[in-house]
Image (cartoon, rainbow, N blue to C red; front, side, top):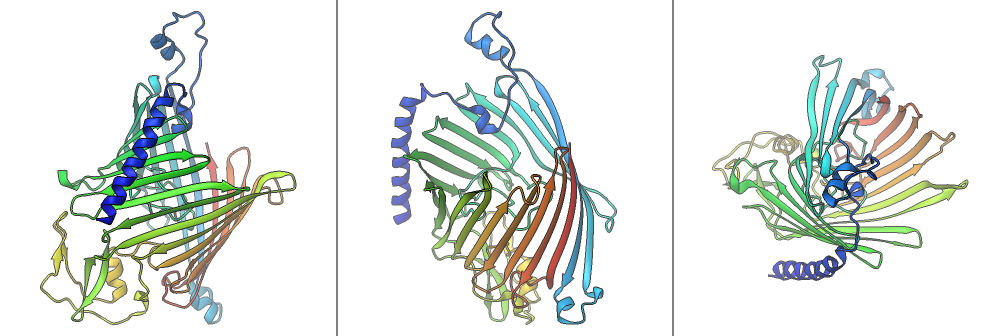
Amino acid sequence: MTIRILSIATIVFCGQMLVASVNAADNIVIDESSMFSDTQSLVDSSKLVNTAAFDTLTKEKKSLGFSGNINAVGDGILSQKYFEENASLANSSTQFGLIGDAFIDARLLLGYKAFLSLEMQYSPTVKLPSFAMPEVFVDANIAKHVYFRAGKQVLQWGRCYFFTPTDLVNVEHKSFIPKIGQREGTFGVKTTIPFGTLANLYGFIDLNHATRADSVAGAGRCEVRISGVELAASAWGRKYRNPVFGADASFGFFGIQFAAEGTLSKGGNLYRMTETSGALYTVHEKDLVYKGAFDIGRAFTIGEITDRLQVTGEVFLNSAGTSENVFADSSTYKYSSPVLSSDPLTGANISAMSGTKTQFFFGKNLYSPNEYGRCYAALFTSFTHFIIADMTASANAMLNCTDGSAIIAGDISYTNLANLTIDLSVTGFVGAQKHEYTMSGNAMDIRLNVGLGF
């Protein structure tokens, strides 16, 4: 009942703000290029017939753009045994590979657009290249008042820098160790209705796992701006799943940027592991589930260079996490019947399997990076013009406050005018063995990436 009252109040609030926004919208010019990061080529139309429709067409020009990048990556990995024993390289491993991305961008008349990204990965170990299509979508609009993006896409959904609990639409979230290559997009239709700088409405129909009509998921978001404070309310729903309600806000104060977001649902929509009569099962969380993130950041001017140093701190609370050390339990659990339940949406049996808790945890896809524990803290720093103008240094840290394990990473990156990038990063995995960030048995990863954009 409380969640229903909150959601009704949220809808009424957003509706009042949008009514006021519509009255002002006729005098506001919509910045479409800012919305979709598009650019347009203008032509001299002074000698053409001066009608509104014809003038719009003559100010636009069809174009086809092609770009991409190629990265050669090498990793040297030192295990925990390397530091515990005699520093033998027998306790190390290496990984090498090539990653190439190609982007095709077609700009059409009236603000229509098509985009395609292709990715190829090659490893000398596997020796066979793999191909992927991270994003492919089309943009369309109705009189430049309602905008659509249909296809496989990565959405900007969430307010904080790293932890974005309100983002329930993307299938791949940010990685603490920056990913080389493109993030995987989710398939669906996004609708955007802007009301100038006052408010925005967003809707997303998620077709990524739509194996039948009632498995389509939907999400909505309403943003408003009041006296320099950006507020938003959101909701996500799917049949046979608990609705999730979210809210977020951001504002600046004396040069410091604050952001916060959180979600609330009557029960969890992800499976968790439970033990019954010596067997392991997956079940849905039935208690109230909340997730919240808060970050604070500031940019500093150093040596007369604006925003040379940027620092962001973030905290993430996750009631769906666990305080149990799953990875340290070496006991073997046996299968037992009957099956406790089944998923009404997919029909899949929620059953047990033989093995350790770690094997069960990964075998049932129950692990989500940086959401395993109940509390996390992170720090991100970046320093541009490091030694020379084309070089940037960064130092980041992530702590699982529940089990005490952490990741510490340092990076130096050089990029010149020819789009040549040379990046060296060192990542350490700290804490007791068999915790979240030490479960792999690795202690240090040294990565060199050489990339060229075109």
